[in-house]
Image 1 (cartoon, rainbow, N blue to C red):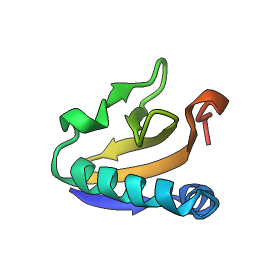
Image 2 (image 1 turned 60 degrees about the vertical axis):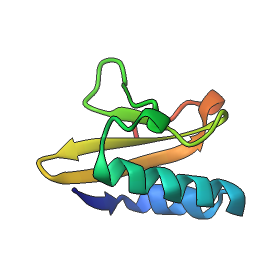
Image 3 (image 1 turned 180 degrees about the vertical axis):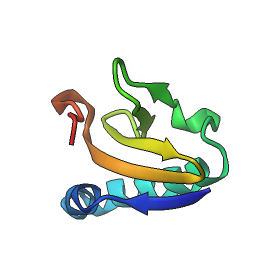
Image 4 (image 1 turned 120 degrees about the horizontal axis):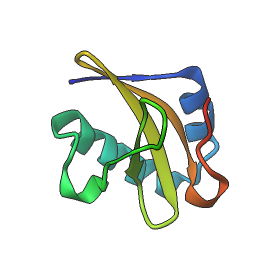
Length: 85
C-alpha cells in the first residue's frame, strides 16, 4: 500500500513531541503492510469513511483507504477528538 499525508496531518505531526513522532512512524510502517496489525488497534470511526489507529495510550491518527492509497488525515491526543479535518 502507498501512504499519503494530507497537509493537515503533516502540520499536526510536526507539532508532536519527537517520541510520539517516532511511535507514529513505527505504526505507519505497520499500517502500510497490514491495516489490521494487532498493535494498531484499527477501528472504524462512526458514521464516516475513516479509520482510527492507536499510536500509544494517548495518541491516535486517522486515515481513509482509497483503492491502494492510505491517506493519513489527522493525528493527535485521543481525548481532544480527531475531528472531520
